[in-house]
Amino acid sequence: MADFDDIKGRKPLKNQISKLMSKGRICHGYIFEGPVGSGKKLIADAFSRLLFCKNPDKLKVCGRCEGCLGHKEQYILKSDKSISVEDIRALIKDTQLLPLGSGNKIYIIHDADTMTDQAQNAFLKALEEPPSNVYFLLTVTNSEQLIDTIKSRCVIIYTGVNTESEVLDYLQSKYPDTDIQQINFAASFSEGCIGRADTLITDETFRQTRSAAVRYLSEINTDLADKDKSTNITVFLEVLQSLFRDALIFKETEQTDNLINADFLDIIKRTAANYSSESLFKACNYVAKAAQYIKDNVSASIAIGTMNVELMEELNI
Image 1 (tube, rainbow, N blue to C red):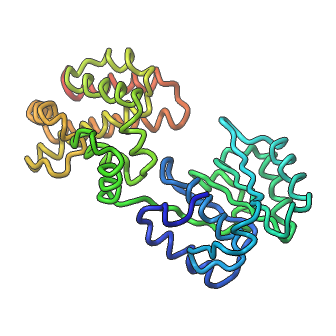
Image 2: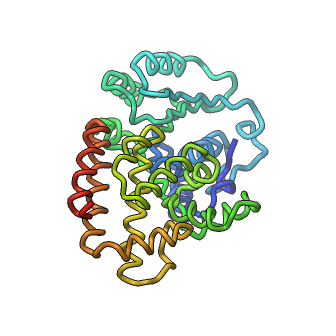
Image 3: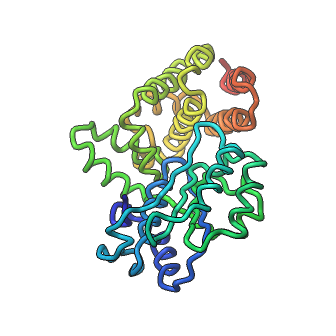
């Protein structure tokens, strides 16, 4: 199991949890909210260690009590798509069973914001009258997907993200043989999420998607978006927007310090030279609009098609 020494940075998060433990007011439900890759699962796991320990000192477990040394009844519920009411009913049934020892039973529900409406209503009943030794830890990307009555019965803890320098230090330590430009890109593009930074370094699909976005910008060939969108259209748009953003920044400042994609500086410079600041700004917005369409479940072909038309008109292709 993890502990808070395994979690880099996050001073506000650690201070909040430390205060909770110092006050000794332990709630039966906790919601850990943060973006994908921000370490929610690791944080929930570390927090569960504090709940098992009979003598925790802020963020430290004693390491000597029965809760630390004995069998830990930690149960994890997760689903690839959504959490059904049947999943929750099975969990609730298990909470009624006596623990194997005298310690706590902790249920971690990952991606709890994917619970169906029926599942949430069933889970609410468990929150309203939980057994005294049962605790629920929920990880979510967006707590707005949870009904208000669940949120009102839980303590919401925002996981936050790491600073770019913390991510950079982490990546340099973990991947000493990786090209420094790739490290710098991952640290910047990760938006402070170490799990996301790991993916940016190791995932071949992401590299292919990024290459597709770079080719699109380099050639300003709208056909490429349709040909390459099978890689990952959401990431494709995110990278493309960052490239237009870099071109706009370079256009305005002629500085490279704040560029996300500095390893493609030649393409960024060429794009900056070819288009006005106004056109680059509008291009960023067109790509962002396409990404929002995807998020709102508009078909990828419509979202990309609309973006292509807008870019062609603005950039005079």
